[in-house]
Image 1 (spheres, rainbow, N blue to C red):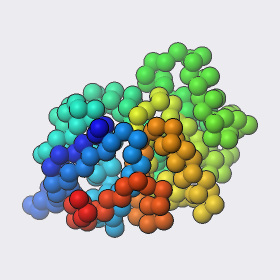
Image 2: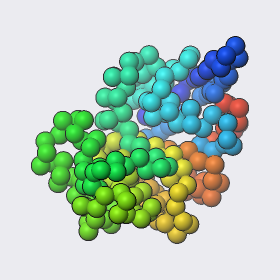
Image 3: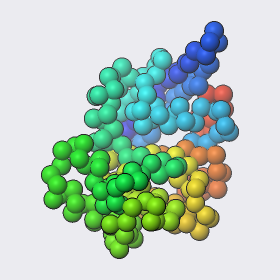
Length: 223
């Protein structure tokens, strides 16, 4: 059963007098428990597709269905609520708040869901322990290695127990060994029932996936 569907989704930007189609009629079904990789060269529409999947943007036309709810025309405030509950993001550049500790960074998404402080702290500590950072709770991002920062980002993505994890180039800023560790952890999450969607240009990552979609010129090439 599809947990997320894109139905004939177009995203068109106007640059001066020119119209550019970043997405040109994309159809995509993501089933619960899938591990999907979306690949494509620079300019293929990967980032726009990721934003659409992650409820960070709405289409120019077409429909985006999340758990059978059409979210294509929702206001940003409503999208933010959905993102907070249903989707966890892992960003290539980690996007950790430099002035916050690892524990506080993981707590942050829970604050927006108004989860009580004690529960936040307990859950954040448990998640950081799960990614092997039990001894780094009070460290700020500049006191952590790149791999450790990525693991904090993974813990933060899991903080509200989302159904879907969206990862943008999850190994892009990591050495090869740390990258393998991160991908193995994502595969473990997938085996536990999480739906994983990776957006990347790295063909090596496709070996972890159950499905691979190739993007070019805003279209899926292998539908």
